[in-house]
Length: 203
Image (cartoon, helix red, strand yellow):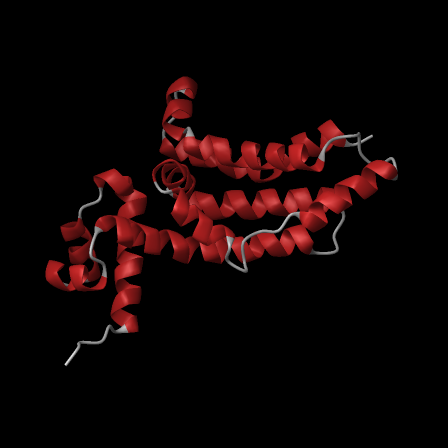
């Protein structure tokens, strides 16, 4: 008789794995550590997740699909463009401060396994920027913001939010700061990034 998987145990494994991945990253984490953190043996962990990569992907999906609907909601609500940029930035940075391995994992998967990223794009909650693009065009026409391609503006918003987390070890070295100081700087960016972008595009 085939053994069924218990959702509670699976949830406990995912939570334990998330804590280990946050502390040690993908390369530094060990399956035995995750099993110990979850309070189970390694054989049971492998029953639920055959490899560390599969477990990492499961943790990533669980986090990504907590964040993606919120970002999608911001991009498609009725707020003005400036408020939209503020909300997007605040939501993204606040979330990634709590889950700092997320941006690096996305880059890793883009390079290693493009098919995995395709599964994210086809998900119904994956952010859709059509409304954002139309809104940029409308506010340019109304003389609210300077002419800029909507795609370029979105890339600017995304890049200024994502890059510091991807380059955190380099930035800590260049700025001569520790993890605590880095997180403080990131918290400041929840408003400063949006202000910088808005000041650059408003008329």
